[in-house]
Amino acid sequence: MLAACATPWDPPGLRPHRAELQRHPGQRLFDATPYLLPVRGELIEFFCRWPTDRPLRIHLPQSANRHERRALDAAVVAWESAGLGLRFERVPRPQAEIDVAFLEADQTLRAEGTGFTLADCRLADAGPAAIAGPRLPAQLDRARIRIVRREQDEWSEEDHAYFAGELTGVMLHELAHALGFQGHTQFVDGILARDTKRSTRVGRRILAGEVFREPTLAALYGLPSGVVLSRRGVSIARTEVLDRLLPGRPGPWVRVGDRSGRVFWRAPKGEWGVTLVSVTTARRQPERLVLLPD
Image (cartoon, rainbow, N blue to C red; front, side):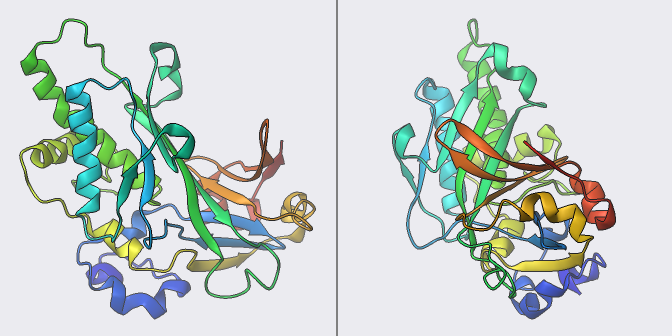
């Protein structure tokens, strides 16, 4: 079993990759929320990640002060050294694949806690033949990270030093989502947990010079992007609203969150597609899958 028999989670699509996963003791991929593609009477669960054969272009907020910049940079450097094979290149916002920004005070209501991340997976082809095998032609191609900014008007140098660890931890956590791990780990410490106190402890250790390792993301990046975990049958009537949109169009993009998912296309004035109403319900009871068109 995976993860030293810590869980009964054993999706068919990962069985050929057991040897690779066993190279990462302590990994918690079974806590991840996979990307979901509901199409032609199937609900396909799959993982999606960035390619590692080139630098990943990232933009950090220009408004960051020197303390914030140090905290954010420390998180980026930590992920570069985490054994995933990733390199980052700092670029202006229009060129960025991962865009990081602070939320203004009037925007923080969108964020639950310290921020949020949207990580979009692109399917090069969603035709029947292209998605029939053990791996979808899919990889991440855009992510947006938004971080709640603390008020700092009267902060001392000690205040900045104290909260730098928190910001580093938040950035490590949100970058994990941007790199392809959706969901949160359960009952363990570390930056993939929902509890900010846990990621803050990691952030402070990183700023103190400790080496960063994250076996769950290392396990994810040891798998091919687009690897199919499972295929579950649903009524063709439940996927029909998306099936009608697929023919003749490249793409689409897929996004998944804690509650809902999206299958969509991009347009100059925004995006359009369908919303998967409840990720949890769809995964547990595919026969209750609900897709709502925009």
